[in-house]
Length: 112
Image (cartoon, rainbow, N blue to C red; front, side, top):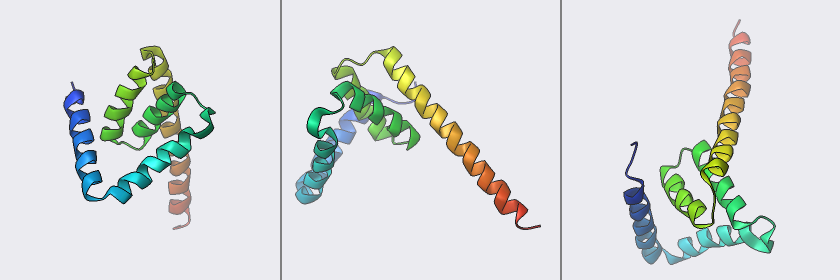
């Protein structure tokens, strides 16, 4: 096991709460971003959580992974749906590495 995900989630939520008590305007602003993303119910909660989990992987945010894995389970995401979302994350990261490799080669070739 890579991590104790239940502990990670609990620690993240506790830390968010403590920071929010000390800096409530910052927490309110952060909460407003989430509310704005859900506005209009264009995407259902499960779709939003699948996207959030995939983005958490691409940004390498372990706290985000733990929290959004819990939320995805709460809204009924299946392991198959999670795997499909993560496959998109893997694909996107590979694509980014490929395109940045082109940039690296271009930078190298301009040095000749």
